[in-house]
Length: 227
Image 1 (cartoon, helix red, strand yellow):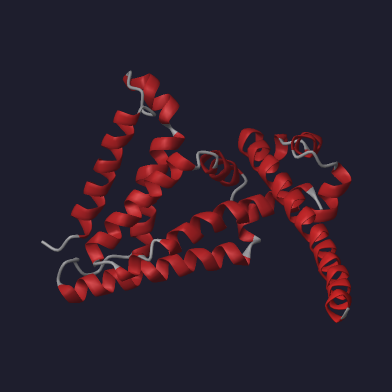
Image 2 (image 1 turned 90 degrees about the vertical axis):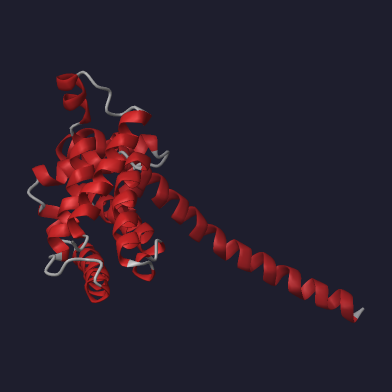
């Protein structure tokens, strides 16, 4: 009898805990679905051209829920940008490149940046659209600025260690280095269509991507390496 009574007491408690979790999980799923749909819509059409009703339909939500979770179309756009950048920064942290030998760390970063654009092609038009906005919405996000500064600080530490070891030449600006290896990959993907047409080469083919990746690594590593 005591065991049966105990069982009867526990079951409602577990059921109640599960019931309390369900709305949280549903909210998370809804937010994620809206962000996924919004990322596609903003990447395809930019902030001005994107339509909230399309995002709501594609996410199987409704406009009321969209505004409930994100407030406005511009706030949703900000959330998409922060998620896209945040995911990239998180993957960079997972590399643990500051624990690698300096030249290996630089090589890993260049390869990562290239491979990330291959795996996440929507980030290219998102960046292009925000540049057309003059970086207006990125400027409003302290979180994004902090993420970028953190990355530059990590690159600075790698360069400093490489200098002390005599494998990296002194005086390299970590910000300029970041811009350089980012540009080597970003320009390739953002202009792949026009470059492919102009030079009669399919830049998005596996062979062309492989050649470009190797070239990007060689350019950056050759630049940073101590003579």
